[in-house]
Image (cartoon, rainbow, N blue to C red; front, side):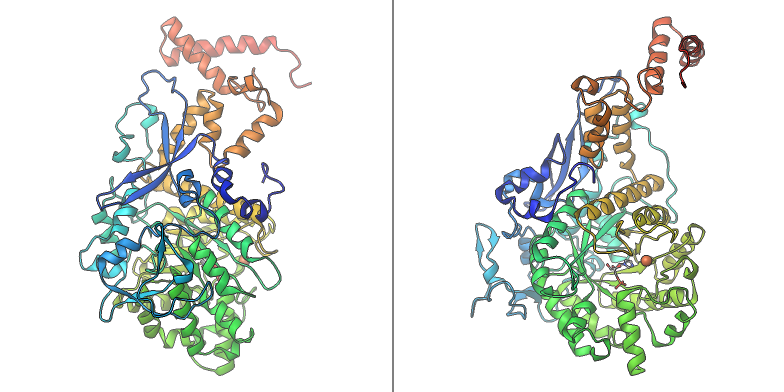
Length: 632
Ligand code: IRN
Ligand code: FE2
């Protein structure tokens, strides 16, 4: 990106105590604030963006805007977070209070040995001592998942936390009580959804109980700041990170995690293959305030030397338990790739493009047996419910070319995912459904409608979709178009695609570009759905733009430093920050400046705005006539 062309992961991981100020420097005039809940000690983070005094007459707009904040305590200077130290385990007490779990000696010994004969892990100044880490599991006969509690009418602190988080810009902040254009909000079209004016903990509970939303929150990830994925909530985005056999290191992946959440990733998936998978994951989970997802079949495959035929249920099961003990919040499981569907992919232009899907297809064909993820699905659910790991049912047969969109292989798998959804719900396991892929625009809505119908409204989580295949190097754009559409139609989470898609492993710049492209798609969808409060951000920025409050315009944007740099390329002088024009049109041709003049003309001459426009335009016409040879 423009403002840090040579940023490498070392620039992030070597910051030490300066990490906070370094990360905060990308958001001038912003500070971390917390909104308290009813549950003792519960506080929900937001990023407050301070704006200068509003000059609009009669404006009651406050001088701050609260943005949804995914960056955790990395942007809270009072926390003194450093890489490797781990985060404060804010959920530890909530989980303990439920009295439904027990510590036990787990399998993972990657980051120091578990102290012998200890009953509980040790904490130093409130922080977990990594060398004493022990996993938690459900006590025998107890349910621990958010869905378990939701179905029984119980509101958890996690539910209250997400309710406050989603209520941004609503009554809590008294931002919608004003009058005039700043408060104007378009009505949206939320296809088949019913988003309430106020999101209450009880509304959250109902959505989770119905399976329409999930709160991925493994009991072994106490550092997590809970978030919700469902179509009656803000559209979320996921960023994929992870090393491959040939590229990238452990600290590089942690740098990507911090970078992704700084720019707004709501969840992060660690797709590491190659060496040190458990060690990388441990560092990522302990450092992450957002839910972490994985595709466990990748690690299982690594264990058998990369030969899919050698995979077995036992190896896979052990991998699931190890990852659940570490605190992975959701697993992608390709249980819908059935043996009989594989022949449907033969005549495709691009065959099977899912990594997990192709591994399972190879196993099924080699053994001529049904997919063991499908045949052992109940046992998988038994494991997931012990730790409250959510399942993301993988789309192993998604289309990988525009020509293959919505074909028999893809849709057959979708119907099977619906069948598995019901099974998981019987175990109180939280479910979301993965979707495509490569889909032309006219076929996107059908995907959403079929998913809702056949998967009983479980949240949809799609990869893009890419709306054309002709732009390698720009697939964050080809896919953000599809992502915005499907988000509007009801998709709950959008898996980002970076400019490196189909070409190579993304670096830090690609991660940022991908996250910002998807923040745009998700927010555009929230606007179109008429999500209460979403448009307020736009109104704040539009207002700053119209009043030529340049600094505010930069600071309110998704990427303030880039916006500022683009502006400064032509007009670097400090005085230009107050100028009522920019270098795009220059002082004489700025439409906003002209309108501003029209309005003040009206005031001076006691005209209605319509008269003024007429009068003002006549005057402007005269002015224009005086400027000669403007095109030469
Ligand atoms: C999301 C929707 N469909 C696929 N995804 C993501 O793609 C999935 O969650 C994972 O992060 C990534 C790669 O999955 P495959 O290729 O193993 O299916
Ligand atoms: Fe692709």
